[in-house]
Image (cartoon, rainbow, N blue to C red):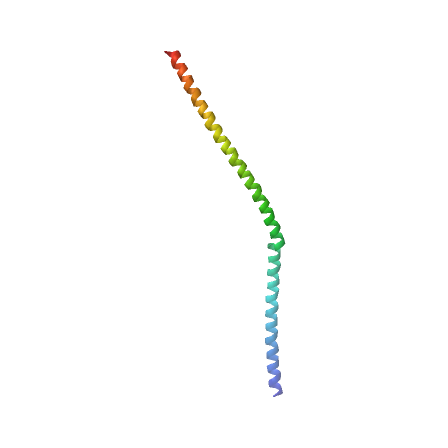
Length: 102
């Protein structure tokens, strides 16, 4: 009976050792994964700083876009004005040339 208990106890110990070794390997691989995650990803504080920077960049870009829109509106007005003036000047020049050529 004693030998049977010893045999079962040895088997149980061997199984426990295998389980503990398996758990040790898994925990080790999880710690490697956590190290990689900490190394490759940002934390909340860094994310908040990035978001603040993005907000300021977005505001700057919005201001630049508004400036470009205003400049474009001014340019369109200038093109219409000078285009109209050019057409009128061309018409006057054609009229004068037609008077001279007769």
